[in-house]
Length: 568
Image (cartoon, rainbow, N blue to C red):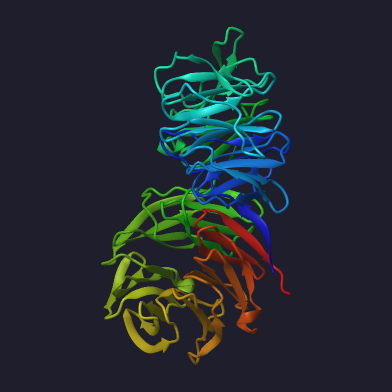
């Protein structure tokens, strides 16, 4: 079986010009935020202690802890609110649809009995309050004519609710049952956020993080005016991604989130101290690469938006690699001294790597969009690139050979010494090529697959190679006699996206669109597999082994997970 050991969580889904909501549970120093169809919960003092709730059918927009910390209420873009248990099997307690459009904010009452939501009512009600275990409404919320962006419960009795939105109004409601009391009309534009002070004496309509890339701490005076106490400057490159879009003050932590998904955690008691920084991907992770000589073990991950991140086993986030040409990434390969990338054009980029620093990129045009990019590990200056219609050999940044073919290539792999290549095609056939200098010669054609080939990898001892297809089947081949070594690997229910071998060539893992990863032992029947169900919402797109018993997976949910494999 497989046991989840670590999670490198994704960052919140961000959008330029729109703030994001962070929720906190001060008792456990835990935060919650939304990304895609998931709600991520993680501890500030232990960022590896993270997990995802993934049962929403639509993109999530806000999540809040109940006052006792036992429940979480989360909402999505369809107007649905789900209340579920934070611990154990995280069972669903209740589900309602109080609004007909997107929910923009959600708050619990201090006694934990009621929930108020605000958002886009699509011409109907923009605010609703209800008893969370029955769904019965507790008041009428007139007074808004447009989308309501924020709401809050007064944290002390008598209970009150405040709301604000795109009609430039901040409204005040008394109850329960709640009814309109009065409006504040002092704003001249959208009001993005509204919050009571913890003692319930004031509510303020200011946002303390900004697109100017700073966070500001304000002292609220007795006359309700604000005085600037301190400006917090977050480390960064000064680019658009450093704009701040979210914040949270929890216990001694001042938390900010940037447009690029970077968290900075300042100390309220010692704000001059350097902040703790961590981040995650925002988009689907497309590949993982292990640096086998690193100690501790280091993995690079890439997403199609061009982000490359470094992860250290047992530590987590190890920094972001900043390339000078921050182009999108389709194919990726790396060794400890060099990165090789391709995007959605005809170019291959070779980038020198010195620690966390990326050098200048050297580019070469390969005559078509690459669908696979392979480095010969024993002489990494040699690379094999395939396009839909050709096989291209590179020596450093020069094309030394281009071989046109009369079939459609979908995947490829090259042996560590660069003497042989396996090329997969749309027709499900594998073609073996020998490579001698700049000459590529077809040696054999292997037929077993019934779908387009999606991934091919040589085993570390080079005695075998594995292939996978879009028809959910994987096959392990003996390299010497080119016969099937392990068959009947048909336990996925959808396209297989990726393959990985363990360092001792004893295990092969497959990742699929069906959200699962499966690990097979070469010397045992395929039926004795280890299945990791629901490894990644939306599908598994990246795999690598850190050691013979540790598998790292990544997927469409932008998270990375480390699994310990325990043989039965």
